[in-house]
Length: 637
Image (cartoon, rainbow, N blue to C red; front, side, top):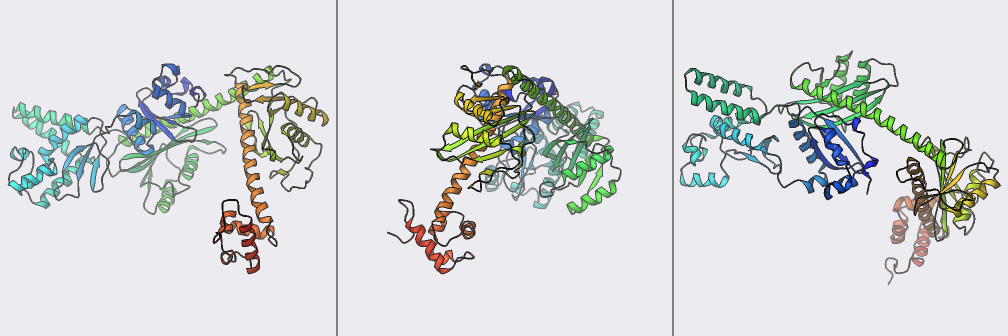
């Protein structure tokens, strides 16, 4: 369970424009998608007192670990993009919260002999062409009712169509002239196919000729003083405009473009990319580019193009690249992108129309990405500074602990005891300074292990002493630390702190502050104190100590598992006479596990380079004789 306050964005970071938002869990998976006419007002409602939230909403916000959003121009865009994201991510909380209805599509069954047009809320089927989704189901139904008068495409179900063929009489729509009645052969198949093609072209966005035709017919009816007919055409035109609302999210089916907008900042560049395929946004991404070079706006746009299309397996350039600003050498970039795509690519900056409107939306999102990045960076720096100040005050340190080191011990019944030492500088992990230790003292308990690690960490030497175990100190860089920490944290309570303090005094580091963080009540123990320091649960200082402790624990557990598995494997193969480390490694590389080696026949073992017949027999016999209880070798009773 996550505390929503840990990832709640500041109110000033959230725009007040319409948009679509995504809640993500700790693994980055989208768990909920929603839309809002005012993003700030809607998102703020999720971070109210949990007791006031609906139980399912409370479960969702505590399952999430972050939230992001995309700004759009209007509510219709938000509806379309929300639907696209729900289909793309299939978030589990949307499935739970939404009813069983989907957004309406207008479908044309192209594989039928006489295709049928219908409004559907179904999963897409092969051989059917879909148009939409549309914002208003009632509008598209009204429009379809009017479209059949113009195009004469059938809307009846297959059962009604077959029945009409059998009896040789059309249905009511055929009688009143709203259908071309292919069921009774009033129209030839090729002529009917032309009607279907015209309908599809109209629905795909090529609607201007038909709209102009309706407008002309309406004016002509008015001029003839046929006002009822003019009113009917007016209503038809209104329904048509409501159903085919054109917005910056939906274009005609032929639109294939990548829209790239940038927002210039002092130190960074905000970037927003919309990938439009088949007239609809199929993907989007926003990121921040550090301004490490002295480049013009065109130069930074070139860097963006390089980043967006650096992996063509993921992102193939569209036919048209729309940029928020012109390039200095557009012809060269168009040639390069054409080569990457394998077809012609054009680059331009839209000046008017729907593409300009979508560019404005992308520009707004780029500015929001840059603003949010700056706010998060500032807020993160402020929180880390506050955490260090709180630790300084609570632990009576002479200065803020800019460098913190933490030790954690991991063991299993005294075997394979290991320790991890992690380093945080300025509140952030410094992984290149991490160290791992294998405890050398036989049968060492937790206190002895802590004392040994502290002594080895602060021993006055440039290189660790070579021990009998080659993995005594596991780390790619074996060099002395640059300087001691400002605070040493031990995962444990008062006994562990005393052991660490004694080891520090023996190493001549008596002035180094050391504390322990006990897991049960998150108490902070100081050397020589009978009572712990209790930091408030909302303390940034406590949160930083927990992060450091958890990171040390994670590292120690990983090392212990690796060590246990290595010991079990090595001890099993070491028992085979004549099998050296190199050949044992080759066997493991070939078979993968000791169990697979044990199950292999001598002939299969000889397939490994360096394993002869005699050695193969020895391996097979030794592993079969030492098979774990309850597991016999192949062929054994």
